[in-house]
Image (tube, rainbow, N blue to C red):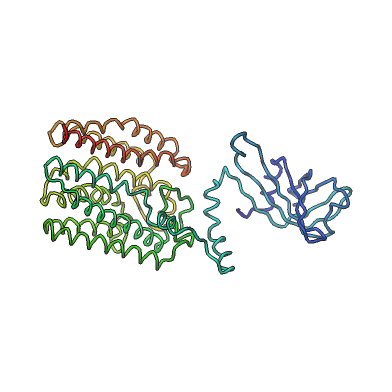
Length: 439
C-alpha cells in the first residue's frame, strides 16, 4: 500500500463509485457502513451521509474512509483492484459527517500488480512476525523443494541423458556409471542453485527484486525467512561435497580425465555468481551456463559411462547449450530492475528491449540451424531432426517477448514455454539418438 498525498487521494476518490466508513464503536467493536460522499480537494475534506444518529462516530473521533472500484467478473472474481484509504477526524454536519483528511494511502493494481504489491509487503510482514517472536514455516519437503529449485533440474537431465545415449550408440553405455554421473550432476546443480541464492542475497539483488516469478528472482526462501543463511550454507556445502566426492570416485574408477571435466564444472558453477569474478554480473552468465549445462555435463556423462573422451557429446550438446542459455536469458527479464539496482549487470540490464528480443531470435535460430547442420555433416544421426518439431514453440516464445517484455507477470507463460522449449527439444534430440541405436 503506497502513501499518497491527500490532494492526490481525494482526486482519485472522485473516480470511485463506492465508499465505506469505518470506525470503532462505543462498545469497542468495529463499525463499517456503506455511505454516499462528496469530496473537496481544495478543503481537504469529505462529506458523507445522510447517516442515522445511532450510526455516527463520536465528535472528533478518527475515522477511516475506503473508496473502491469493484466490478465483479463472473467466474473470475473481480477485475483490477483499486482503492484509496483516507483518515481524519469526523465532525457532525446536518444529517451527515464532515471528515477533515489528514493522511491517505491506496493501491491501484493497474500501477502495482498484486504479486508485486505482496512482495513489497514482505519486509513489513517479517517485521511483524519478528515482533511476535514467530517465523513462517512450511513442511520440510516443500522447503527443500523451494530452496533447491528442483523443477529446474530439467537443465541437468537433458545433457546427462544426451551423454548417456551417445555412449549407448558407441556401444559403451554402463547403467551404474551413468546413474552415478547423474547423481553427481544433480548434486552440483542443486548446490549451484543454493549458492546463487546466497550470493544474490548477500549482494542485495534478490532484496531489490520486487517482481519475482516462479521462474525468476531466486527461491526467495531467505527473503521470506523460511530458511536461515546458516542452513542454506550447510545444504549448499553438503551438495557440493557429495558431487565432488562422487566425481573423485568416478575418476578413480573410470579415468582421471573425468576429474578435469568435473573440476571445470565445479569452477564454472562457482565463478558464475561468487566473488571476485561474479561472471553473471559482467554479462557472461549465458556463456557460462551454456558451457556447464551443455558440453561439460554431456561429455562428463559420456566419459563416466564409456571410460574415455569423445568429441561427439561436445558437438551434439551445442543446440542444448544454446537453448539452456536462452532460458537464463529470458528468465532474467523480470529481474532487470532489481539486478541493475544491485549492480548486477546481466545482458538483460545492458541491452535494450529491442536488442534483447533480437538476441533471443538469433540464439534460438542458431540452435535449430545447429541441429540441421550437424545432421548434414554426419555428426548426429538423421533421427535427431525430430527436435525441429519444437520450432512453433520457439516462435511462440519470441512473440511473447515482443508482447509482454515489460510485464513480469504477463511474461510468465512465455518463460514457461521457453523452459519447455529447451526440455522438449532436448528430449526429442535424445529420442533421435535412441531410435538410431535400436534401429
